Length: 140
Image (cartoon, rainbow, N blue to C red; front, side, top):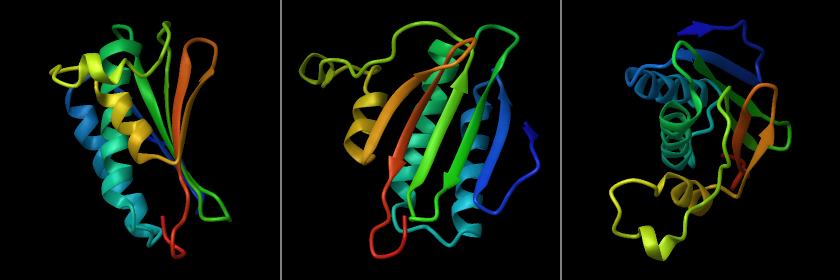
């Protein structure tokens, strides 16, 4: 992990293509939520961080590369989670009925169900998969 200088409302870190990176990214997010005192939806946020990081490792990070996790807490209380990778390919939620019993392929279904918004943006190279959590009762 290579942590970047942090501002009070944005935290980001880069992770290698390694299975342990998902756990480390989740702990990084847990620490940011605690520092910001925004743990109301913390379990949902941490699960989405895990799913997006796992998807990046499995589908978006070529050998010898890594992914960037960026967390931004906006002034209106919206928390945005972004995972940047350099891989190509289409990101979409699989057909839920077809994959309900599948061992893999449900990560984006979970993100879509837990987050208030999610989406994909292009970058060169690769993509950014993001999700957002609106504040409820003043806390994310």
